Amino acid sequence: MAESYYRSLGEGTFESTLHTQGAWNDHEQHMAPAAGLLVHCLEQTNQRPDLRLARVSFEILGIIPQGIFDVTTKVARAGRTIELLEAELIAGGRTAIKATAWRLAVGDTSEVAALEDEAMPGPREAAGFDGMTAWPGNFINTLEFRAVPGLRPGRGQVWVRSPFEMVDGGPTPDLVSLLGLVDAANGVAARVPPGGDSWMFPNVDLQIHLHRRPAGRWLGLDTRVTFGTDGIGLTSSVLHDESGPFGRSEQILTVRPLGRS
Image 1 (cartoon, rainbow, N blue to C red):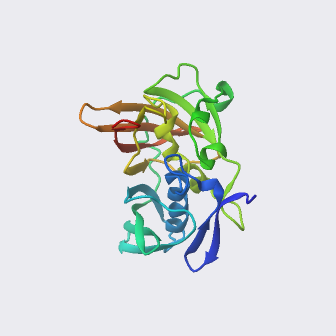
Image 2 (image 1 turned 120 degrees about the vertical axis):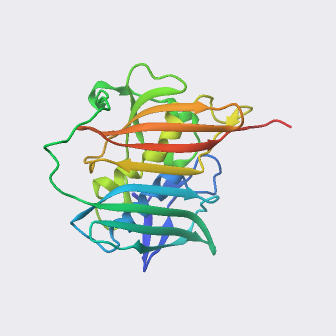
């Protein structure tokens, strides 16, 4: 078995491995590693050490099929201190994901630095968590989860990490590895169990804001899940590494009944 989520075929072409298999359909990729791959490609675009990735916005335009696909990137708005990047994942002639990313100038702001989000207990203070085994798909099976006591439907704190590289041929930067796990937030404190005669609640986007660059391989998800009354929901997470909060994520959900006429 491959020990990466993707194989690089050169010149922006990639092939997914079975480790990317999603939860809603067995022939699709999970959004989490696909987002990680797009971050990997964005980070390699017009590299600028004076700027840092501060926000990435993903629009999920449909099923992300398994197999061979292309990733294109470009600078949509160049600038000395602010830069906007764009990326697309294109499979079978169809764009499956569009992403935009803001890079902002870095500088010393330690004099005014402040943080309001509270740090969650670390992974060594969390217990092994098998609640994600209810989810099908090979991607979820590649991950290790640890839950902080108090996890319940709709609210919880969970740590997750992956032993796999994002792309074959070399080590994965921490930023790429961590952001390639964020989409899993939609399953860690699900309000209803997946499958059967329950409900489906896939997200159609993923928004990530980063107030600092994270490090390490453990991603902490301090997550809240809301289901509205008219078929729309929201999964919101404060993102952590082992040093504390580093950003936030939001996922808008389409909530629909399963197995009902």
